[in-house]
Image (cartoon, rainbow, N blue to C red; front, side, top):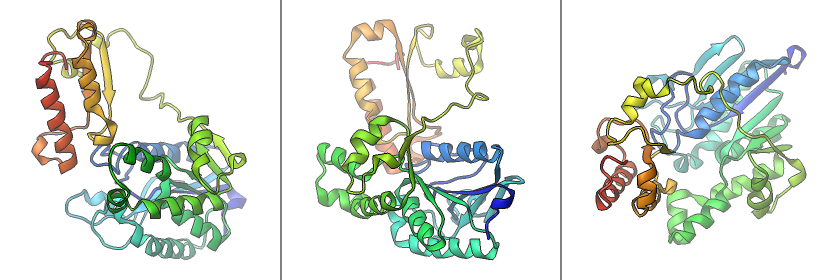
Amino acid sequence: MSSQEDGLYIALLSIHGLIRWHNLELGRDADTGGQTLYVVELAQALSALPGVARVDLVTQRVVDKNVSPDYAERIEPLADNLRIVRIDAGPDEYLAKEQLWDHLDFFIDNLTGFFRDQDAVPDILHSHYADAGYVGSHLASLLGIPLIHTGHSLGRVKRSRLMASGLNAQQIEKSFNMSRRIEAEEQTLATAERVITSTHQEIAEQYELYDHYQPDQMRVVPPGTNLNQFTPPSGDELQTPLFKEMTRHLKNPDKPIVLALSRPDRRKNINALIDAFGQSEQLQDLANLLIIARNRDDIDDLEEGAQEVFHELLVTIDRYDLYGKV
C-alpha cells in the first residue's frame, strides 16, 4: 500500500559511495563526493516539506573492515519521517560504482522485498546517477511508481572527454563499464517522467546525445546553498583559526586567494591550475593559490590514484618554485 493518504512517501535512490547522516567522508574516494552531499541535503529538505510524510534515502549496505561499521547498519533514522535504508547488493565488501553493475539486479530484488515487507511502497522514486537509474527504472515498471531522475554526470559525455584525453574505447570500457552505463541511462530516460538537471546546458548539449532525449520531460533545478553553513562575511574571517590553518605555508597570507576545491582525482585537472599559476608571474604577485584536495594525514596512505595526483602537484610546485605561494 502507499502512504499517500497521510502525505507523499518519497524514496531517493543513490547506490554507490559511502552515505550516512553525520561526518560525511567527502573526497575519501571517487564515489563519495558531491552527489553524496547532494542527496543527503535533498533528503533532509524534502522531509521538511508540507505534504511529505516520509523520505527514505536508499543506498548500498557495506560490510567491510576497511570502512566504518556505520555503513553496515540497515536502517539509520535521522527523524521520525527520515531515514537511510541500506540494501544488500551482492558481496559485503565496499565496491566501486564500476563494479556494482553485476549486482544491481540482486539489489532490485532485495529492495522490492523491503518495500513489500513493510507493506508500503513509495509514491515517487527519485534516482541519482546511472546505477540508481537502472534500479529505479526497473522498480518503476515493476511496482507502477513514477520515476524522477537526476544524472549528475552522463556516460556519453564522459566517454567523449576520456577519448579526447587519449584513452581508446577498449581502455574506457575496461575501466568504466561505459557501455553498460550508457545503456542504463538510455533505459532510465525512456522510463523517467521527469529528469532534473542543474543547467539548461545539460539539456541542450549533453542529454541531446541520447536516443531517448525528451527535452519536454526535463526541468532545471539549480543546486541550492545551505545557509546554515554558508553565510555573508562578518569581517573577522582573517582572524579565525581556519584562516591561519589554510595560510600557514604562505609567505604573504594577506594576498587575495585563488581557491580550488575538489577531490584528488586526475579528471579534476588540478595540476593544470598549478601549471598556469606557475607560468604567470603577474598572478603570483597578485594572489596566492590555495588548493583543498581532501583531508589526509599521509599521502602514502591514500589510494593509488590520489597518490599520483598529489605527486604531480608537488612536482609542479617544485618545478616553478612556488613554495610559499601555494
